[in-house]
Amino acid sequence: MQLQARMQVRSAGPRRAAAAVPVRAMAGSRFADVAQAPPDPILGVSEAFRASTDPNKLNLGVGAYRDEQLKPVVLSVVKKAESKIFSRNENKEYLTIEGLDAFRKATVDLLLGAGHPAIKEGRVAVVQSLSGTGSLRVGAAFIARFMKGATVYLSNPTWGNHRNIFGDEGVEWKYYRYFDADTVGLDFKGMTEDLQAAPPGSVVVLHGCAHNPTGIDPTKEQWAAIADLCKERNLMPFFDVAYQGFATGDLDKDAYAPRLFVERGLEIMVAQSYSKNLGLYGERVGALVMVLSDKEAASRCLSQLKRLARALYSNPPTHGARIAAEVVNDKELFEEWKGEMRGMAGRIERVRGELQRSLESKYPAKDWSFITKQIGMFSFTGLTPAQVDNMTNKHAIFMTRDGRISLAGLNSAKVEYLADAIVDSVRNH
Ligand code: KET
Image 1: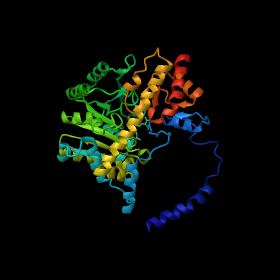
Image 2: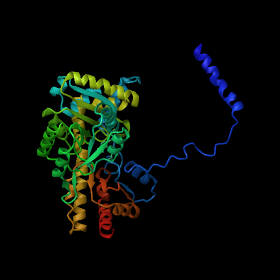
Image 3: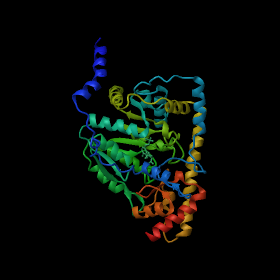
Image 4: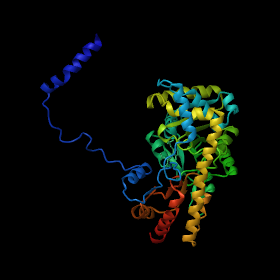
C-alpha cells in the first residue's frame, strides 16, 4: 500500500513541479566550478599513445607485458583455466563479500607457500579485492578506521597511485628516502634513518619485490634489518606485491620479503595483484591479506575488512578469481604458469641487456650499467622531464615524466630506435 502511494506521488511529481515552479533554462551546469583533473601520470600516457598517429610510436608508459610483436598476451594457462571454467557452466551469483574461497586459499598459498604455519593456525585474514589497487584501498580504509592518526610512509619515489589511495582515504602519508641518484642504488642509510624517526604505530609501505619505479630492491641482509627495525619501532609493514614473479622469474623467490617478515614474528598487511603475473589486468584480481599473531585477531579483522568492502563495492568479481584459483590450485597448471612466468621475465631481461649494449655502443662515455642492475618491468633512466618531453614529442616514445620506461613494452626490433632517442635526449636537452 505504502509503496503504491509513494509511486503515485512520484509519478505525479514532474507535472506538479512544472506547474508550481516555472521552468528556467539553466545558465550552465551546477558543476561549472569543478576544475579539470590532470590526466593520470601513468594511464594518461596510454591515452596520449592511442591518440598519436606517428607510425614509430612506442608505448613504454604503463607496466603491462607485451610479446615480441608488442601485442598484449593472454597466458596459455589462463586460456586452459578458462576452458575448464566454461565447461563447468557455473552461475553468475554474487560471491561472498570476502570472495571466492578457492581463490582466497590460492592467494595465501602463493604468498606464504602452501602449508605455512600461519595458514594452519588460521591467523591469516584475506579478502579478495579489486586487484592491487582495490586491495590497497581496502587496506587504507582499514588503517583510517582502526589505526587512527597513523602516518603511512611511502618510498621516495614510489608508484604514483599510492599517494592517491592513502590520500583519498584521508590517511596522512610521508616519504622515506629510498633512491640514491648518485649511485643509482638504494639509499639504505637514508631509508633506515627515516624509518627510525617514524612514530611507533606508523605504517610502512614496502614493495614486495621489483620496486616500482626504480627496479631496486633491498638485499636479503637489508630486508632482515628492515624487519628488525619495524619490530623495534613497532611499525606496521604493508607490502605491495604487484610483481611476484617479475623480479627473478621465480614466484617463491619473489615472495622472500613478506615471508621473512612473517618468520620474524611480525604482523603484516599485503596487497596482492594478479594483473601482471597472470596477465589479468582487466579482470581486477587481487587480495588484501593480513597475517596476524592469532586466530581471534584474524577473525575480527576479517569481519571488519568485509564491513569496509561491503560499502566500497559490495563483493568482488568472479571470473578472474576463478582463473587464478584454477591455475594456482592445479599442480599441472601451476607448473606451466611458472614456465610462462620465466618466459615473460626472461624476455624483459633480454631486452634490458640489448638496450644497455646499444646505449654503450652509441654513448660510451656514460655508464649505462644501471639498466641491467635494475630488476622487474621497469628501467628508471634518470631522464629529466625536459628529456622525456623530447622522447615523446620528437621520437613518439611515450613514457612517464619521472623517467621510467616499461621494458615490458619493448622488443628487440625497437631497441636501437629507443637507444637513439635516449642518446639524442641526453645529449641535446
Ligand atoms: N602496486 C604497484 C607497485 C603497481 O605498480 C601497480 C600497477 C599496482 C599496485 C596496481 O595494479 P592493479 O592492476 O590494480 O593490480 N602499476 C602499473 C599500472 C598502473 O599504474 O595502474 C604501472 O605502474 O604502470
